[in-house]
Image (cartoon, rainbow, N blue to C red; front, side, top):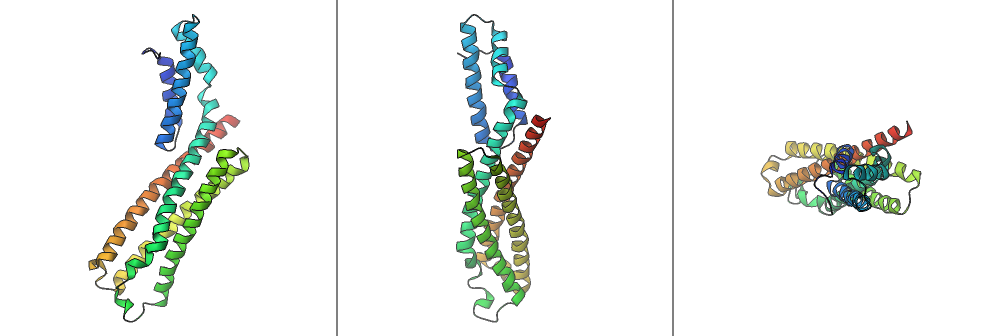
Length: 234
């Protein structure tokens, strides 16, 4: 049974937690599993007559130092962050591809003069950005699935490439989407009073924020993974 005086175990886990970056739930699961394993080892030593403090010390040494444990754990967290980003992009880009044109139905040019060619090109580019994001998200999930079955070093490069691509796609979507919205207001006086435009802007803004958080989490997890590998190499 766990003891309240398992100070060395708690300190070891706190140090690991402070140095890990990644999805909160996955990180919590890793730490919980580690805690159970450490406490089981401590209890086994205690039952064999080893004093409490020495039992903890031995269990922690057997478990491994942060430098030994972090690379594999951080790699798992980086993959988890890519999975979360890919799933979020898949859902949002899928909606963007299917429902993107709904924002413009009933606009002034649906029954009147067409907007400038540049505007139409920009609107089309937004659709293509969402389509590219959708395909990249699918690729990300395939890479995550492959990573769960293999530890080949090349997969880490593919993970970073897909994550970087999703990050770039989000940046392009934000730039193109904001430019399109601003241009729409200059072409159509009632744009800010038209409900589909207002609702679309709010939903897209929320989507950008959600994806931005997912990208930030992936970048942090990937950067920490690189740091842990570099420290192990030295």
